[in-house]
Amino acid sequence: MKNTGHKNRGTKGSRKKKSTGLAATEAAAIRNKYLRAYGETPSPVETSIPGDKDETLEESTLTEKPKGDSVNMSQLQALEMPELNKMAKKLEIPNYGSLQKNELIFQILQRNAEKTGMLYTEGVLEILPEGFGFLRSESFNYLPCPEDVYVSPSQIRRFDLQTGDIISGEIRRPKDRERFFALVK
Image (tube, helix red, strand yellow):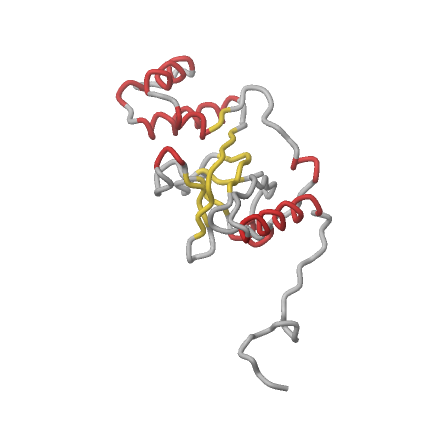
């Protein structure tokens, strides 16, 4: 047999995907891959992975819409400062007048998470060489900013995500030593 230089293609040690009943999500990932191949814009892929360790997904969460008094980070980024100041006053954020726009958005998201626990965003995925990614915002010309949302390597692998995919989903606020919001669903 001739060695063509391709490692693990159909040979011992090649990785196979597990069948986990993710038909809808896998179909969306395949559809996005197809669209990218033909130069079209992929549709948003909603994920529902709580973290790297617990990777359970129910198909009902794929069609889940924001409920109640949820806040969408993308919508906040599009607002002007006077509108953000009104929201901050309503949420009783101290010293909101002296905060910069990105700090004010962060405070509004934090306060809303304390009250309702629901935060949503949409962005374009950029995968870094380290394997994890961030959702970048159009309001910052897709450049790194403090409001970027972290996407874990397991989510990227599981849904075969690639740089340029449009992702929308539920996010959680940063934990103790974290700097960024993280994609949950």
